[in-house]
Length: 207
Image 1 (cartoon, rainbow, N blue to C red):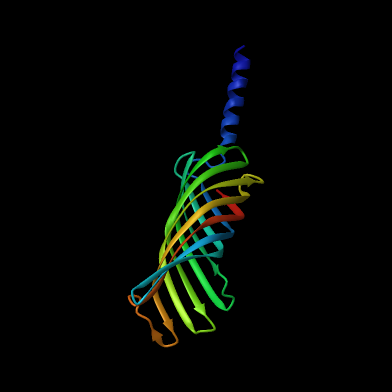
Image 2 (cartoon, helix red, strand yellow; image 1 turned 90 degrees about the horizontal axis):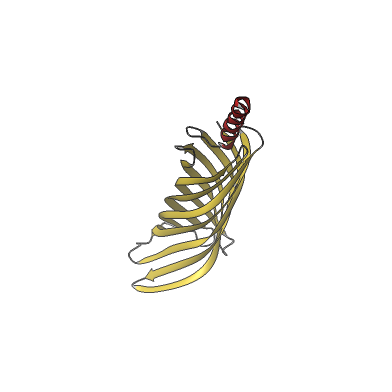
């Protein structure tokens, strides 16, 4: 009987250790690609006349992420997302960047599988260059997102991830110029609020 109890205890200890795919003190590095489709609420104010309309926009990101497990089920991290902003103006060159801080709670942590929920927030910026009118604008603001992610590891270190979230961006126009003419934002400005789903996938390394 004592022998069976010892064997059972050893089995349970091994099983519990196998569950910890992201143990306290471990690091997770990630690289991948993301895409989002947004409802873009634009508010214009030109010489005191304000108008609001909604259109559709998109974005492609190439994120680099670092995550640290402060507890067995809780991790914090940061993510740099650089990419392209897309709208219906095909003659524009648009660049965007987001720097996230994140907190994640891990629901499922098996030997090779990790299911988690994450909250992300941080600063965001957008630069649009219109090649037809020679206009350049810059917007700055913030980002907030809530989503679910799943990681699968092929061994103890290397794996893949899939992530989906609802993202929101509030961007305020900082500058606008047409050629050498600088337009005062107090006289004419275009502010944006973007909301929509985002889907990402990529590779991750755990150590």
